[in-house]
Amino acid sequence: NRHILGRAYFPNHFPTNRAARLPYTGKTREAGTFMDKQQLGKKAFAFSARAAGACTALAQKPVVRGLGRAAQQFILCAVLARGTILNGFSPFAVAMQGAVCARGGGFAAVLGSFFGYLVLRSDLNGVGCCAAALLTLACGHVFADLRARHSAWFMPLVAALCMGACSFVFLPRLTPGTVLLFACVLVLTFGASYFYLLALSPPRSENDMLRPGGLLVLTATLLISVYDISLFGVVTPARVAALVLVMGASYLGGCAPGAAAGVAFGITMDAAAGHGAFFSCTYGFGALVGGVFRGAGKVGFAAAYLCAGAAASLLGADDPAFVSGVAEGAAAALVFAAIPEHVWGMARDALLPAPQNAQEVVQ
Image 1 (cartoon, rainbow, N blue to C red):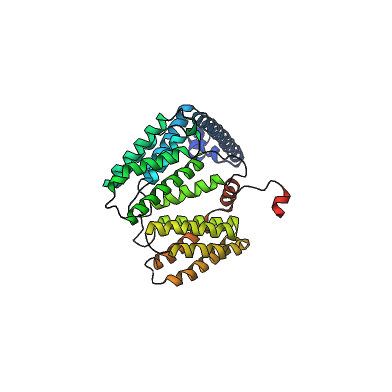
Image 2 (image 1 turned 60 degrees about the vertical axis):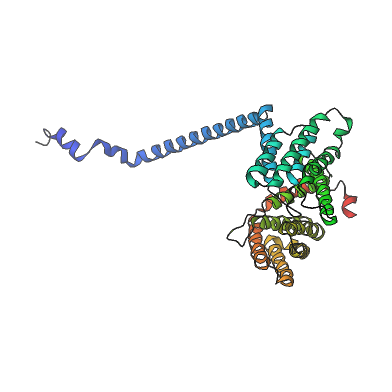
C-alpha cells in the first residue's frame, strides 16, 4: 500500500519547495545576492559618474554660465536694495550696479534693483534709487569705448554721481547737517562699488589681500540688508552670522585679524541699528581675547570668545540690545563649534594668502 500511495504520500510529507530551505542551497543564494548587490553598486557608481560629467559639461557651456551670472547679479541687487543706512538712504544696489557695469553687463542687475526697490521696499526713496541704477547702466554703455572706463575707479565714481543726481531731489531740507550726511552717502556709494568690483573680480595674485577685503564689504552690506529679520523678536540672524564670521577670522588669523574683523562687523551692526557702539565693543573684545585661545581647539576657543563677549556686554547692560547680544553670542558659539574643521581649513586656504617663503614667515 505504501508503494501504491507513494506518489500521493511524497508530496504531502516531502514538499518540493523544502529544497529551497536545505542547508546546501543557502550559500548559493547568499552568493547570488552578494553578486547582485555588487553589480547594482557598480551600475550606481557608473550612473553617478556619468551624471556628474554631464552636469560639469553643462555648467561649462556659455549659455549656462551667462544665466548663472545673471541670476547672481539679480539676487545680489535685489537683496542689497533692502539695506538702509544713514537715516533711510539705500545706496548698496546702485553701488553693485556700478560694479557689474564695470565688468560688462548690468541688465540683470538693474532688474534686481527694480525688484528690490519697488517690491521689497516700495517707498519714495526707492524710486530715486531705481533711476540712479538705470542711469548707471546707461552711462556704462555710453562710455563703453572710453579708455578711462576700464579703470577700477571710473564706474564706482559714475555710480556715486548718478546716486547724487537722482536722490538729491528727495532731501527734506537743505541744512548743513543734511548736506554733510548726503555727501557721506555718496562717498559710501563710491567705496562700496569699488570693493564690490574687487569682490566680483578674480584675484590679481596669490597674495592679493584686496579681494578678501571686497568680500568682507560685500558680506557686511548683505548683513545690513537683512538686518530687520528677527526670530521671536530677540535673535537677529544677521548678527549671529556676523558673530560666526568674526569668530572664524579670530580662529584662523589670530588676535589682530580677529579684532579688526570684530570692529568692522560691529560697526556694521551698530550702523544698521542706528545707535551706540555696543556691538563694536563686544565683537572686537571677544575676538581679541578669543584669538589668544585659538590653540585650545574649537570648543575652547568658542568658550573663551563667549566669556569675553559676555564680559564686554556687561559694560552696556542698560543697552536695549544687551539680552539679544548675549543670546546671539551663545547661538553663534554653538554654530561655530558645529562647523567641521576642514571647512575652516578651506576658508583659510581660500581667503588668507600663504607666505611666499620662509623669510616672510620669520618676518
